[in-house]
Length: 354
Image 1 (cartoon, rainbow, N blue to C red):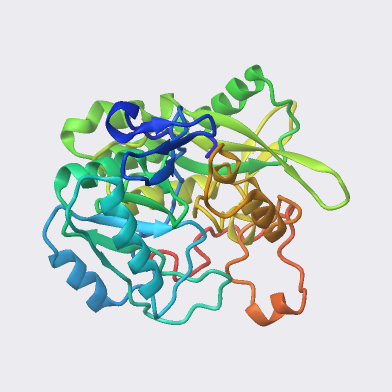
Image 2 (image 1 turned 180 degrees about the vertical axis):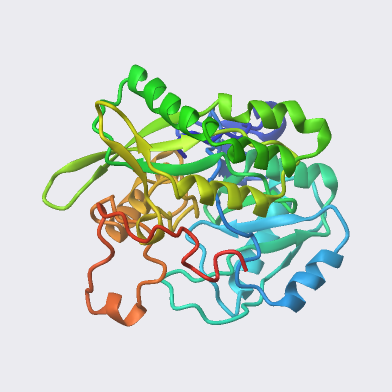
């Protein structure tokens, strides 16, 4: 994903032979995609336990380490997850050195009227620590049987802050620096912005919290609009203090999205929020629409092909359509506009954090 760290690529010497098509052929016959530069990490800005029951959360909290989360590409909730569990328990021991693995499906708190409703994440446990670490280090595992993402039970902090629109700038390196400086100067001008990060971080991370706003990254994102036009947006990232709580970080990014970012010559940057906030149906990242997910473009990808992903998001510019009614979609109803400001409250989805 734009601006995200890439995961490590496994060693060919210990896993098999890399083919010209970007695929590892293991000695046991198992194949999986292994790009030399690693996979991009999805910038997920919501709870890994979204829409799970209280009992489900309590039960999983009691499971002993090592444990983590796993979800498939283009995940959606199903009360009967036997097929997914069977595929994961079959493939994972063939990919990493573990005699067994336990895959536990989530239980939904309520039925969500969304295209690919949550909960999406399964619990992975009963696995040796080295095997789980290898799964997490690579992140995405794309095989002919199933494509899935593994991440730590202590959910990694997202680097993504927001996506800005309405800035009339080019997309060259100098513009990247200028947009990053614009956001940095605005946030640093608000005393509470840096104080919040320091207040909710461990004392040992004090310097990291104080300097977090000095290293803002801005990356251009060009999207297609209806009628053949395009628009240039800006994804904004930073490295949050390691010890800050996940939900405290979401509070901070929500506040950052409630601001506007004024320039003297290039207009006013406005964060995309509410129904205009991007949400990828494939990787569940927030910094691009489904049609611009980078994963299907990776050589050797076994998951959903680019054609089907693009067909799901024909303009490549549609935002989060999760709350669009299923019956409206089945009748060909239009999704949210790609260019408007939408709601100024990024938390307008009540189930986002549950």
